[in-house]
Image (cartoon, rainbow, N blue to C red; front, top):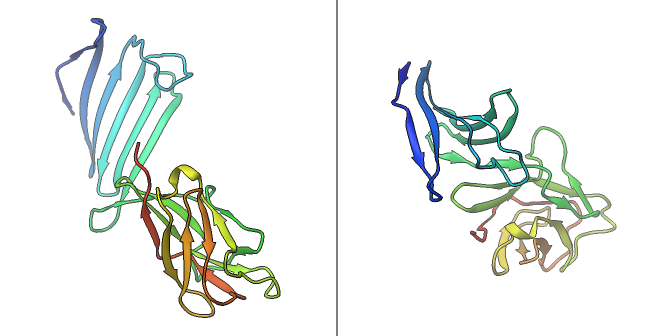
Length: 203
């Protein structure tokens, strides 16, 4: 273990907070550990300030950021995952894509389940496969297939071509987060989300 010199960070209001910085090499993982004492900075809005430890771990698998109070309570945990080439992967968020009542996940282990992901470079990706609940109640032009959080929706409506049981079809992602089928014929069996990728608004 290599121990770095203690650091005093000067804040804009003139007060100081003392930190102990350490680096640890653990197997193939590299960790930078910072212990912050007696800080008046809240960890997140609404939390009571406490002494805490911030650990940043770097490895071939990705980057982990943990903020933990000295009693072991985790306040924040962020993970960036790398693929085999070292590129950052998006973190999957399975709960943010709401399917319309006409469709359900395709199911089984062969095809990817419908999902929504965001990446650190600002891109939002929708992927997976859904099937119609009832072929007698198909997707017709203008049908909503699913809805994503509006804050992730594109700033202007975008059009994509995806696969379906009738071949390539048009799907639009609107500014309110709805994913709308806009093909020229009815989809009666299944439709894919794979191929939908766009830049979400940045704060």
